[in-house]
Length: 115
Length: 114
Image (cartoon, rainbow over all chains, first blue to last red; front, side, top):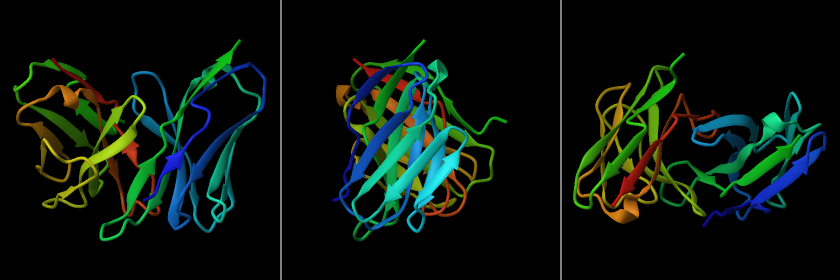
């Protein structure tokens, strides 16, 4: 069964730090890995999607890498700002046995960037 | 741009009451999904609809029913609410395959069952 883990569950840092958020998954047979952002009381917003054939994706100050063979992904946030404070979720798209493709989510990591 | 719209935003029910959560998307997406999000559990798939007229069970379907009313709308019904169904419910939609595209999420419905 595919499981996605995000450690730590919460992180508090001062403004300006470069951050690395970690995500691990148990089954390397994935179609893609996605990083989402969730603000308090809001829905999820997709940040980056990395296809299984790719090693990384970049969007502005965000860079996500994927090492499928080791079951790991990292989300790098450069020069963190208070506006980056949110919960970040990692999800993998895989094909469960006997079913159709599904997203499996980690529990998220709550980031607080202090001014 | 509305995207995915969920109603209501908040709801309090008593055990045994029924209600329907509504979801509509204006992006002409084929596939729609219902998830629940609980503290310490992450998001779990309840039901999904790959296209108009089809629905399939996800990971946690018990106690729920769904209707894909048309291409735009996908509703989730609780026939007899239980305290274990207290959660935040999210609707999502996608164009094309989940393997290649991103999902768009609504803002959620926060449900408390007393």
